[in-house]
Length: 247
Image 1 (cartoon, one colour):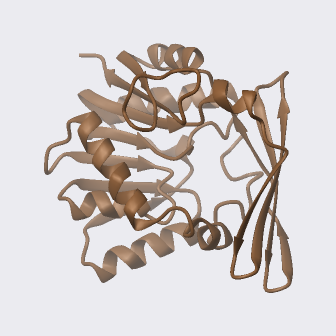
Image 2 (cartoon, rainbow, N blue to C red):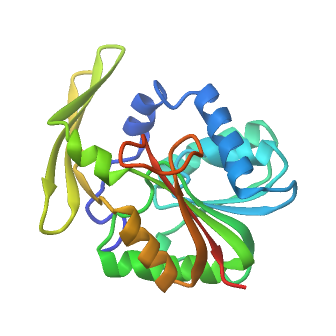
């Protein structure tokens, strides 16, 4: 399954409009602080942001002196990211591509998959992607994956979620397939009286599974953390997994 085949409209302009309500500048600043600290980044280090969307994290890292490349399959989101970068004279390399078709060798100090931008394909494709990302890292480079903490989420699986902005709505209805491990989100945008359907599915991955996938892809020194950089627990708010390319 290719990223984007079943995700038309899911993370394009409508999603960006609603997400701006909670993906604030302060949140972005704090998250970039955490990324830099956890990965021990140095000015000038090269970073690949996989699933960069409208450049929220990508552009902030560029502001701080890192050599950043952002890749996303959404042309609309990338257009916004590039426009924002241009207004600030930020040097960011944006690429509109399917993650699975992206191949570079020994180029990056850090590969970043932030805010649940991994797991939209079948398991075989996800493992293949991890191998490709490993090949794109310099020796000793770091991969960081920020994802849903499956254990906590399934204990508190919501039936729905509604985001409201200016009397417009993003409505998500949730169901979980235990046979596949996929969370199905039946998403509807209602804006200015018009309704747009944008359903999608994402694999809820346990820490043990993701650690095994990363080992298989050629990573070592793999550790799990919560959204604040503390050791991962069953009740952690997020699951951040870090691994290093084998020396």
